[in-house]
Image (cartoon, rainbow, N blue to C red; front, side, top):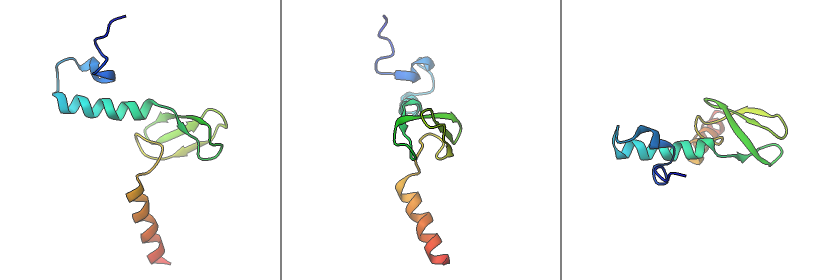
Length: 89
């Protein structure tokens, strides 16, 4: 089998176009986006991306909304949201 996309990963489809920085960012985002993640309800490693921001567990059929590329919100953003909610109360 050819080894032309070992370093390039999924961004190997772009060839020499768009620049190294853009291809590396695309590769890293797609690697996380396409990998399986842990389900927040049943804790199995079976969460896959259905569409932009929608994630589904293939084990317990739970669907939930989360980040566009990862099924979890960034910790800093979630802390800001919790802090703002605490001030309102």
